Each structure stands twice: as structure tokens, then as C-alpha cells.
Image (cartoon, rainbow, N blue to C red; front, side):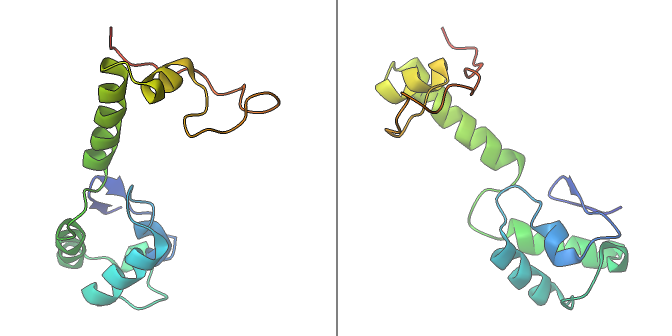
Length: 119
């Protein structure tokens, strides 16, 4: 099972779908990456050799946007910063309520509060 940007690629799935499981890569970007790496639309994870996998990983890392764990860390750092400077959005994140103005009278009561180590 090959790993691309720290994400395992299943051998039985279509490669385009498998590459889109990488955090930060959608289906359209996955199609373009597979096409640039020389894979067909019906290629599966079992068709990925070591060298083709490295080529696909290099193409994915060459994108200007962060992917995988870097993107998760970036998003969590932004939320931690909002909580640390005591903004309204940070307090909504901390309480587990909707952040972008959605109603709370009848919806949005089941989300657990965000667990951050910010005092």
C-alpha cells in the first residue's frame, strides 16, 4: 500500500478517488495530478509502483497550497489564535456553537465544544 503525503492509498480503489482522500486535495485536483503523473482514469492503487508513487508525491507537494498534516496544523493554529486573543469567533469555537451566524434556537446544539489547550 503506497503512501502519498502521509496518506495510505488503497490498492483496490480507483486511484483518482484514493488521491482525493489526501487532506486538502479534492476530486478535480486529484484528476489533474493523476493525469500529470501518467495514470489513466481507470488506474487503481495496485498500479502505483515505487517510482510512479514518488512522482505523484512530488507533483502533489509542488502545489502552492499546504496539504495533509501541514494544512490541519495551519487550520488548528488559526483557531487557537482566535481563542487566545478572545475574539467572538474564538469564544464560539470554544463553546462548540456555530461560528458564522447560524441560528441556535432549534439547531446546532449537538456539536461538542472544541478542546484546545489555551488558557
